[in-house]
Image (cartoon, rainbow, N blue to C red):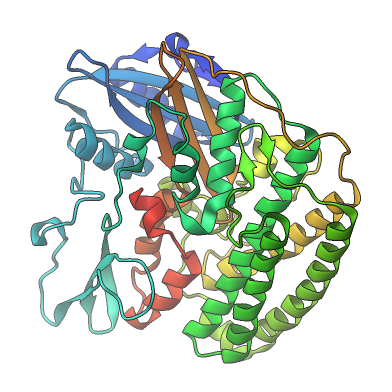
Length: 487
């Protein structure tokens, strides 16, 4: 551990006054040394301290050692950019510049993160037969808005610029002063397909700030809901990847089977996306014997169908040929960019919050980390299939051993002057919520990092050297969130 950063753990609270305020050079050196070892930037944001200065706070994750490091610095107007030495800092620094007006001097590519980009914000390459292809922000399919600009030579992509922000709602600015009646609904809709993941991160933070543990039965029910969310989206993604190459059998089957997993979520809580289930202090719905039996039957039947549908993928040489060596990300590039979730594990990186920094039910029942080494579309599909199998095993095991205590424990008031970092391994990867409380015991600052924020640069790198016709398949193999990034 670096003595210039304060150590904490997933959902472990710390006093804000204990967070060291370093010089910019010390923070930069500590972050650089950490990322050269095994640490990565989990979160990095700016906030006004009320005197005209901006406090930059960084959370470094030490996955292999299972702890976090928090440190800060105070700047005014500008500071030397970290991105030249720490590539994974570049998107955070652009966000800080956009939100706080603090300029990272020497940043290699300083442009908007969420404000619509202008023509001058895109890299332009000139030369014989070089041409530019612009796609979006309005797309032909029913997807969220985002603009993609390719620099191509013939069919080959030299560079891809990705411009997002069309769904920016100012979510983080609506949270200070809470928690109140609206807060939970803001969190549940941070990214609609990750309702359980984001809500769980928020609830864990509130429970830590209240110094209250939820009943074990509630923790297990939360974990089951989280894995059902993973099953629905992983199954849907495998079908969508099959659809992008015109392999309709798996595409059609998985489209239906995704709905079966969503219906299992609705069986438990009444909503297919898991809304109104997870709340600070526990959960709102319990499972009786009849429901457990029905869930086991549905899960067994649906998993059998998923096995059949996915086996069609692996048995087709045409599918494997299209997936294999398409959209490759090396382990070195993935580590440098700080990728998380399936995108990182498909490059051979063992990184999973459920295993590295477990909380709740995952402390007692570990899920092995699923990895593959080739970093291509095949690897991202195969890791999803491995995780589907392990999530099903986990749910069956939990249903056989549901604790008998309660499902809800009311929380006392959250405590003032505290900070907590709450991590959840959502189906896309690590979800990070950092919460600070003021002297009045209300939320004073709230920072959300969706896994898509880490992984969009990975998609751009995966397209380098690829044929532009491979973009839909590569894009689907990452399946990143626009609204989760835009917030």
